Picture (cartoon, rainbow, N blue to C red):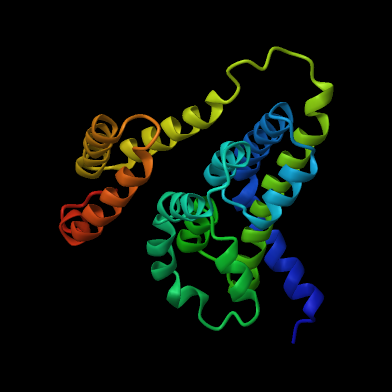
Length: 237
């Protein structure tokens, strides 16, 4: 029977190579986020603590504007729910895989970002490696990469002297890249075109300052109703 230390070592060794590509993206984007927080007037404690407790990149960028704006907890809740609504479907997909993971299940649920979900859902765990610890270390490593980058950005942001005008556009660029990646993965583009169309309609109806929440609500409802037809049509490769 293997000792606990050997079980943990084998799981960590098996999980680490899967997360190396995530490190490159998370570290750079987290660094950018930390710098963005710094130039927005926040101490490095903010990106450090937010990267630990929130761990949702898109929401963390959005939170910067929320912290700088008027106090509106209802809007913050609605925005967070809408942007991360896709995790509802992730969670349903992982019910069987997370069964029997014990106390680790709570952290696995908390740390289930897009990248951790992709690895834990699709990876073939090597024979002799504990599946539960493998998923735990995948999640922990990805979480650490984001935390590490965000903290460094917050600490060294004040030491980096360059023109930061327009740096806030990184959030827009991030969403554009996510959209492009999804577009390339799709066999047909029904959901993406729906997203563009509904967003444009809400933009014209509610204006640039108020369209996001109505658009996200409409998308959530429509895509939920159309989920089965989209799955039957082979929406994603």
